[in-house]
Image (cartoon, rainbow, N blue to C red):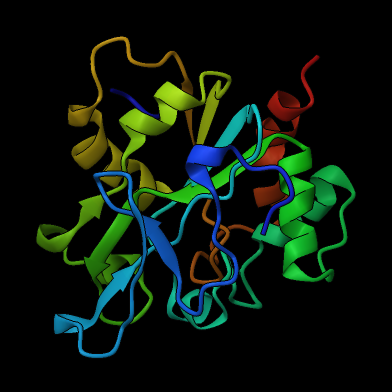
Length: 212
């Protein structure tokens, strides 16, 4: 392949917002809480997807940063531009409480997840992901249950590369007809592009989400 807490969630992808630890679906589809104390080699585990009824756009990162894990929020680093971009595209309040921001993206038929369910990664940099330990999320199930997803956007090239290597081989031929788009990373570590330059690339999310 060439890759160029919620009010209304589907029951099978329920987001367990009251648990004291971040969540993920393991590859059998069972939700569980993962603690970080005592885990070998600093393994970082991802969250459950943010997903409402009939999403059109799926935004994929690689794995939550340390700050995101601490805050139990997608794109939790205060300098990450993701929520600011969503605010610019859809007129939402980027300073609102996290639950309100989540409600807003769901309302605009956007889903958020990460390519990896877990991996060893000292620190927060994508370059530190130990790929031999990386375990992908279950995208075959996601695409099967959410056929309205027509655009998958990768938040940075690492997410796209990991998806191509670890996820594509698990998808049956013709299992989905999504378009794939690599977008500039919203991470503050990607500083070679200004915010407004990134925003222009991210408008593809708005165009697809608002399509009638």
